[in-house]
Image 1 (cartoon, rainbow, N blue to C red):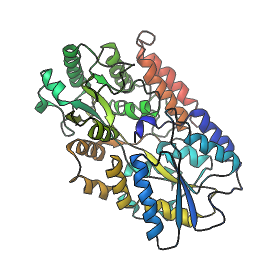
Image 2 (cartoon, rainbow, N blue to C red; image 1 turned 90 degrees about the vertical axis):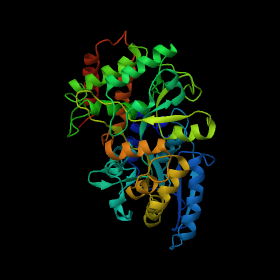
Image 3 (cartoon, rainbow, N blue to C red; image 1 turned 45 degrees about the vertical axis):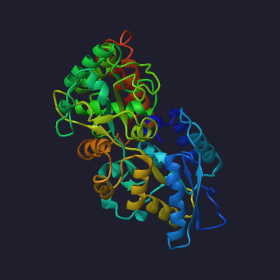
Image 4 (tube, rainbow, N blue to C red; image 1 turned 180 degrees about the vertical axis):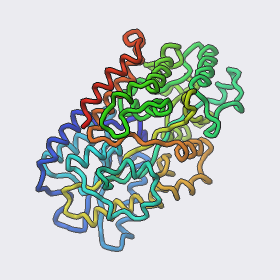
Length: 432
C-alpha cells in the first residue's frame, strides 16, 4: 500500500471534525449489544497487502486474546483525494456512530485528540519503551498517548543501476547513510543524468498535491536549519522563513529551474525506465519486486544541506486510535495493544514492505530484509524526525504543501524568501 503518497486529510474535513466532535457526548459505537465485541475501521481494502495481514491479525486476536474479546474489521479504502474513508468517519461523527477503534494518519493525532474524537490509550499499551521515539512523539498530545503507529516510514532516492552505469556513473562512489551527499553533490549527479538522457533525471512527486509534499520535503528544511514552526509551536515566522528554509526551498526550486525534475512526471516513469531516479519510500519496493522484477535498483539516502551537513529523514504513518465514544474501552484497548505488539508489527512490516514501529522489530528485520530496505531502516534509526505535533496540523500541512508547489512555478515565484515569508504568516494564523 502506498501509505505516504496518499495520506492527506482535507482541511475542510478536519475542520468539520473539530466542529462536530465536540458536541457528541452521547453515542453508540461498534456493537453495543455485546460488550466484548469491537469494531475496527481501516483505510485500505481487504485485497491489499495490508488488508491480507490485517485479516490474519484479527483471526489471531480473536483466537488468542484469552478474554473472550471478538474483533471485526471493516475495510473502507481511501480514494486518491483522501475521500471514502474520511467521508465515512466524518459521517459517523455527525451521527454518533464511530467504531470502537479506527485508523488515522499519525500527524493528525493532536487534531483528533483536541476535538474529542480520541480517548487516551496509555494504560492499554504494553512494552511502551520498545516503541520508536518518533512513534511516541507522533501519538502524544498534552502529555497523553492518543494513537499507536503500527508502522514507520522513510524516503530515499531510488536509482536504476543500469541507467546510472550507462551514463558513466561509478556506483561505488554513490552516497551511503554514513557518508551522505549534500545538495550540491546530488545536483552534480542530476546534471550528469539530465544531460546524458536529455530529460529530467528524477521524479520527486511534485504532481502529488497531498501530504506527500509535507512529509517528503520537510527533511530538507530541517537539514538546512529551518523548521515549520518554532520550538514552542507558537510561531512560524522566524522558522519557516529563516535562512535555512530559504536554502532548502532554493534547492527544491532548482530541481525545476535546472530541468532536473518535472512537475508533470510520466506515470511509473522510474519503474519503466523513463527516469533513472525517483524520490520515494518503501512501498515502491513492494511494487518493484512484484511488478518490475527486471529492473535492478538501489536506494540512496536523502540529500542534506552543504552548510550543516546534517542528514534528516521523514517519519510517521498511519496509527490506531480508540474512539472517545466507545463503551468497550477494555476490549478496544486490548485490540490496539495486540495490533501494535512486536509480532504484529513484524508481520505488517514484512507483508506490506514498511518500516517497523518497534525497536525490537527493527533489530529483527535488519538481518532479514533486502539491501534496499536496510538503507531506509538505517536512515530511519539514525536520522528520522517526526512532523510537528500541532492541533491545527492539517491546515499547517496544507500551507507547506502549497509552498512546495508554488516554489516550482519559477516564473511566478522567483523570490523564494518572499514566498516563504508569506507562507509563514499564513501558518501563524493557525497557531495558538
